[in-house]
Amino acid sequence: MSQDLFIKNIRRLYTPLTADAEDPARPVHEVANAAVLILNGRIAEIGVERDVCRNAPNDVPVLDAEQRVALPGFVDCHAHPVFVGERSHEFHRRNAGTTYQQIAAEGGGITASAQALAEASTEEMVRQSLPRLDRCLLCGTTTLEAKSGYGLVWEQERKQLEAIGRLRQCHPIDLVPTFLVHSVPASRENEREAFIEEVCGRMLPAVAEKHLAEAVDVFCEDGAFAVEESRKILMCAQELGLEIKLHANQFGHTGGARLAAELHAMSADHLEHLSDEEIAALADTKVVCVLLPACIVFLGNLPYPRARKLIEQGARVAVATDMNPGSSMTESLPLCQTIAAVHCRMNPAELLWAVTYDAARALRHHHRIGSLEMGKEGNITLWDIPHLEYLSYHFGAPLLTHAVVRAQVVVSQGRIGYGN
Ligand SMILES: [Zn+2]
Image 1 (spheres, protein in one colour):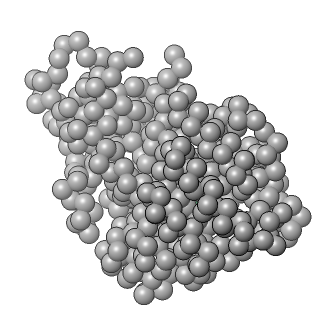
Image 2 (cartoon, helix red, strand yellow):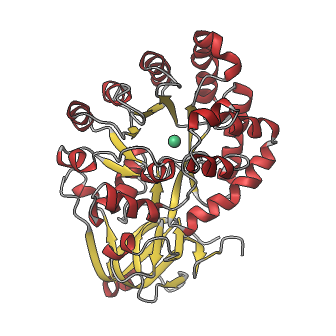
């Protein structure tokens, strides 16, 4: 398979630049009549087409962008794309007035996903997840986080991480695995301390030793893990050389955001409830604040995070899907951008940074992806839009025409193309 590609005839190309990474104004670099040359999977030349053409070898495959807009491949830095079954009935029951707590008490919620996963083979997990990864590509996502966390007990968590590992081998999307410590299994509720000991003494060392995940995430909320429990797990992960992140402050001021700042986590995710002091702590420590607006729409009863205040204070802000069967059933980062535009009042430049460079920073992969610059991986998307501002304005429509992952054209004319 060719690792080279010359993309020509781009109407406008937009990208963040590493040189602006600390600029709070979040400037976007724009090139009209652009072209990109990818050699060995990395961007070798980028700029105005007539300049790039001079250096393009004759035998490189050509992709004609036909005057479309080019953007960096999106980075979805918070997602749970590997699961079994679906929970549409819970969504509609909630809409009819049943509370999440009632549904959970009846064996729904995460317990339902854990049971479906426990009954499925690794092959079945892979089979059910593949179409989701395709849909991510069709929405412009070329790098996707994949969390475990539906196994709960180690045997099942390991199975889920193995499924993620197999998906990395057989699907072209750039998958970044995370070990999520989601909740104490119901069967172990009376022995929480022993379960946390097992997480620290057995699960985390196995994850680190076998390179099953790059980071450890803890669901730090009432009903999941308390701050002290989360601190213990996350410090143990850090000692093993794993990156750390938290589900924090979704349902209240639970202390997760402060803990993320204290431990210098890669990211603090959700953040629907933030005080001025919590915002200052996240901004000072450069923890990436990952906002998940689709989850708020889906659950219907949470406030939107204070994105303007975060941005004013100089915090790094990313936007992600939180794709999962219970609280955010979507692969679409463009949809998340529209919701963040309306409800978090983020502008088009901030939104582009939030789903590219700063999202890559939330995974600590910004040295290789997240912007279109020389030396970075050739992950590029083409869109049927006149300019950047149009993307979040025209919502819910399939506007992507092409996606390129490391020079491989994986979506062509709006259709999955890597199998051909
Ligand atoms: Zn999540």
